[in-house]
Length: 448
View 1 (cartoon, rainbow, N blue to C red):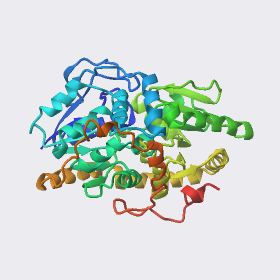
View 2: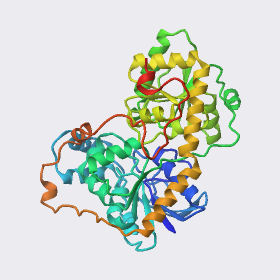
View 3: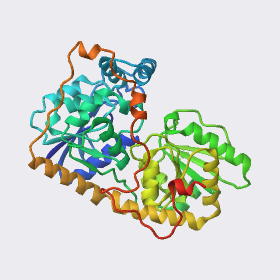
View 4: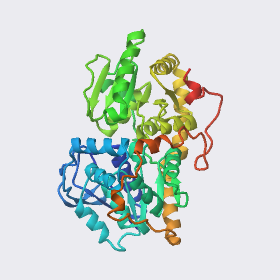
């Protein structure tokens, strides 16, 4: 079976969540299917500047075709358009203009997809909010399988995406909460879909002691892994951590791993290691008292899954449905909502090493059951096999005409998202019930 994988940017040195998700998936499906990646020449997600050469190259055994981006992103223009469609009554055309401003706009990539004919049995499209996924789904709807990586943030409420959710052949959801939000906003229960998520590449020789020695990590520490920016809740994390240090006698550090898109406070207890090798990243996670995830918006946290794979507990923002849900189902994390609960949760973990080990063991069992690579690959292959035997039952809804696209009748996206059901899903048919052995509950019960 031939599968195309379309993603906004791709590379062995790109560590963004959806992009790393796409690369891991391509490499794990490669031994079972004929996989070809189609992407842009962009490396940076803020500018979409062309940095990779156009053409075809091999990345870890996967053929990758790159196409130039026609225009870099204008962040001011994007901000203006975002405020318009997120907060005001607007037109469908204004949403399409927002999508073009979001990017990455690569006419050559879309032309390549339109001319692919029957070259691919199916095309996996990452991520719904980006230009190439939207127009790729419209170009190849009968063979399009969407990997939305959608978060509960304003873009989910844009009307342009609802026909895409209803018109693709299948959807691979990252979490139960992502599926619930998308089905509520698009009424797309007829589309075959699987909650699958993604695995990770955990080295066999992870060594916590090696990280402590290399980076001189002498005291207990929390670790944050990922893009360091405001959208990931990092400003709040810095504030909460500094306030905790002002009120405690405990000695604890906050260690940051990843690219910094915002200034990092000059504090002796906040350490920024920058971009590190995978081996170093996993060593640091293994050495941490806990991994902290402050984000309000996630479709799935790869960093949390990696911490659980290594048997480390997670401290997560309870206001993110996905993080709260996975912490509850795994019994591998403690959730906080506000500075008081952050301090309480951190105090409990630092005071009770056995609690951290118990949570970490729950998390490891959860990871093996639901996110180990044999499970992930099987779910993808099962859905592809099923769809190859079934005819497409629905067609993609066409875009409205010129005049209809310009009628100011579309509600603010923020209002749409606010009306969606919220909260964590404790159990669902896609996941086994969480392990219960009398340990400390997590989520709402664990905040006090």
